[in-house]
Length: 337
Ligand code: HEM
Image 1: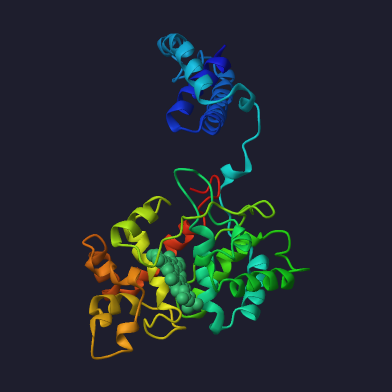
Image 2 (image 1 turned 60 degrees about the vertical axis):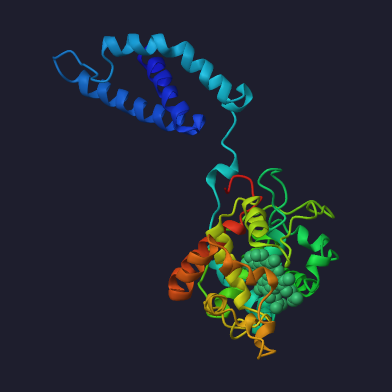
């Protein structure tokens, strides 16, 4: 009797923790352990054994609550799943083992010289940014390989070639079969950031890839002519905050847009956004710095304080970029949110 009461009591924990089966198992096992301990302790004494948590009152109270608990559990979990093993996604994302990380580092270093860092980083954004939190599709799934002819992806064929070369170089290493093409897109961008002096981003692996030839829905990339309000709405639709948008936009410190050294990852982007060199009518070169979508950011009241913080504190920018990049590279991966 006690055991069944204990199990049901555990079920009440389940519904409270939002993960019925896991909470239930943990709680049930803990309770069963308590029970067997109580039996062992009780058997060796002349005193009647008493289980402190199982008073008559508690048993009656729990018994009365059982129908409601059973109904709540049935509503939360389809019956077939009650006996099924926990899905792999419940384990969450995992970091590469040292052997896999070493193989990755070698292949990435061979194929991403500094001259290709900007395109590698941009590739990751363009693969991930097709995600829609509302529609729950798109995201970083290597579908970018089927979308390279879209106008917004001009120039990224060169980026995808890096992924193909890295994949070929991983053959016969510890990373073969462990790291997907979607992981490689994410890892190539992170490697580019590190190679250029930016943060080392601890990226998990295990992203599924899109089915062959299956493109993500079009029309979800932000436009370079977007207003700040449009940019914020575009990122919000992907589940990214204003702060994350501003942090990720710091990627424009790499490449040809004129924010400092093109192959140094630093906070020069934010320093320039505050100076607004594009307003300098006397300097033709300075007026070319940045995209219209960069220019609108310092005039936006939500973006400005974030820009000011990153311009003043590069370490903070590195930390926030790292966190936002990890989030961006998990967009669309079920169970990683
Ligand atoms: C905020 C919205 C964004 C817009 C509208 C935008 C748009 C653009 C455009 C139009 C270019 C120029 C491409 C060219 O002419 O070569 C560019 C370059 C670039 N973008 Fe973005 N981007 C945005 C955010 C991001 C984010 C979040 C990342 C990465 C996390 C990123 C990474 C890059 C990089 C690295 C380049 C330089 C590419 C090169 O020079 O080869 N961008 N972006």
